[in-house]
Amino acid sequence: MAGPVLRVFSYLPNPRVWKALIAAEYCGVEVATLGARPPELARWLWDFEARELSEDEMTETSPYARVGRRGFKTTLYKTDAFLAAHPFGTVPAAFDPEGKTGIFESNSILRAVARSGSGDHGLYGHDGYEASRIDSFLDAGLVFAREAQEYLLALPNPTSELYDRMADAYEFYLGGIDNALGNSAFIAGDQLTIADIGFVCDLGQFLRERKMLEKDPGSGLRPISERASEEYPRAYQHLLKLGALPEFEKHAASLTRDLT
Ligand SMILES: N[C@@H](CCC(=O)N[C@@H](CS)C(=O)NCC(=O)O)C(=O)O
Image: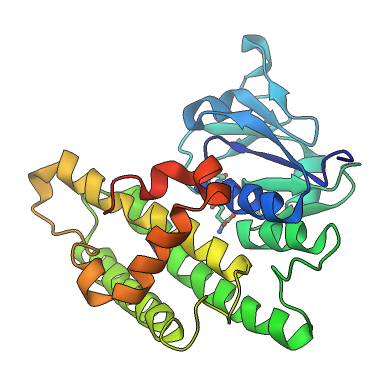
């Protein structure tokens, strides 16, 4: 196998990174990952050449010190080059092998993997129309995942407004996926594509709400996804079926392990 097609810097493990790693299995390419567990990433220099910082490099006067904006409450250390490549300053942050091009948003990193290699795997469709249909599902997934990010970060005590918005986004997204699966074996048609990969990672991550609320029952909130298997049977079974495939199991086993 040639060298990695992408280098991805992130906190690890991260279901958003698993999207790219699962796609890489199907494409027969390598994706290199670099990073550390979530709280430890605040002690790293965010850069193409990301590395752990020493204690005396982590000062408020460091030229790299930035205020964390999403999910990180502490100071983060991001180089100017990192922010030029990744203007929203988020992880996962992917780079081409030379570090010249930054690719952000996990769905776009997923697309980049599917575009690498031969392309005859069909993961990103077989023509522009099919690719655009796959993009449609990935965009719908991002709307759901953005809501889920806010909600999961606020658990176990989301505001009632956030809870209701999440319930609405969940119902809209799962309803659409369930409808799609009423017409074809996979989300975007009759074969597995990156729309399915994005779905498993985003929904699997959202279903963690169950454990989070169970662990902290004080809020008295009912998990939004409590009755998913009955309300959206096709979508739920699809999640379980894909989660059991070796390419998914290898990277994302924890997402579907306790769901049956
Ligand atoms: N929709 C994005 C979400 C990326 C995101 O929001 N990442 C957060 C961590 S969960 C981040 O990097 N925050 C950086 C900060 O707080 O400055 C994706 O799928 O990649």
